[in-house]
Image (cartoon, rainbow, N blue to C red; front, side, top):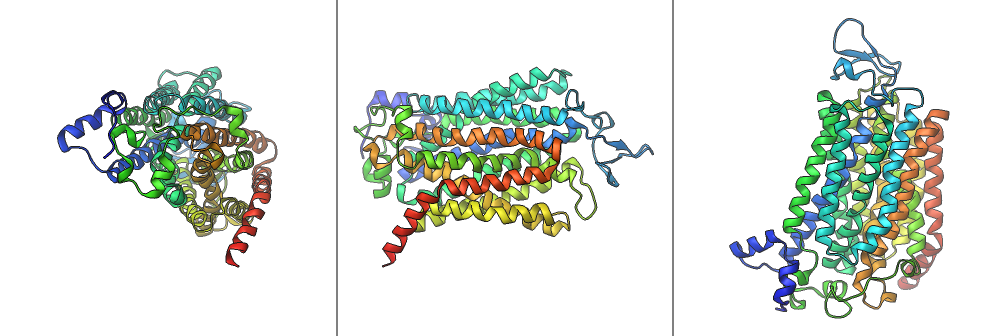
Length: 497
């Protein structure tokens, strides 16, 4: 077994792994790889869970003109609909200044924009830094900062803060810390995954996005009756705990624990092998050179529109469900939040299927185009027929999630990792974080614009115009990859002959 120097080991073996080695000895490559997949899954599920409170508490902060039943019972009139049972204390029903005032819905969109714009901007710098710093330290610090600033948003409830600039500033700093996550985890997982099987493995692994959304939704909704601040604080402290776990046990690269080439599969050797014998010795790629890698620009701009759609649902779906009667009944904030998790359940299946199809065909652009264009009719059906019954709402929501999240999951994981180890890089493994950051950074600009535009558009023209924006975004995402998809289709036909 190939070993590393004592100095390398001291600097790179996490302290928790050192303790485990003392108790149970060194483990196999497969064991370490499993621990990396598990820990990074928890890590990014935590990132997504900590973003979810903003969507759950929107209707609480806005207030939405709720009127009590007038009989002293714990009931209220929601959005002009029937009186329904809810579990909110009386003092929370009037909203929270400044969001319950005229233009409050636009302010909620602006708060989303502040977070997501900072996240998108920070992503470009995070990728550059991630290729040059110890990823375990870098990721752990980002998680710690994220947890602190998510908690600070919730502390506005306990400190009785109603200053809009406070929410904006905390959101901006929180977005910068959150931007450290994605380039880091994609680079780490790519270090341990063979290129030939990345689509399926990363498709399954990328379920962390939906699992985190579901966890964040359930926890946030369950804590609403305690006060909306708890939704942020509890998930913020969860992030801090996960940061400690990552720092103690996450192994960034096989050589960090002295795992040699002899224990790896051929695919693993191909994808993990550094350019000059050690992953620490390769130089990171320059930012503008990364844009020149074939396929990076097309997939980056495709992800711009794909994430615009996905994050519009992430931040606004619970609010949309609450404001739209289903079978003539308006749901409470908690009920709407609970129902919205089904979009992510469909998204898990979509991510896995997209990854599987990409592995089978080798045509990631073709798969992405098919999914994005198929999402258009199902989004239209969800808007048009989702109100008829709960069964129609649930089924159309899940199918929409399937087609919306499929290409989003594929591009941010397997495609980013493959392009980050493109043959034009001549084996330089230090480009992964930069390429991942460019692709997801462009996607995050779309993610920032989507929720903000939704706030303005829904204020001016309602959700019909919002869904029109989503249709056009899906079509644009597909069109950006048409040229690559056509080349892949020709190759597939040639292979069959």
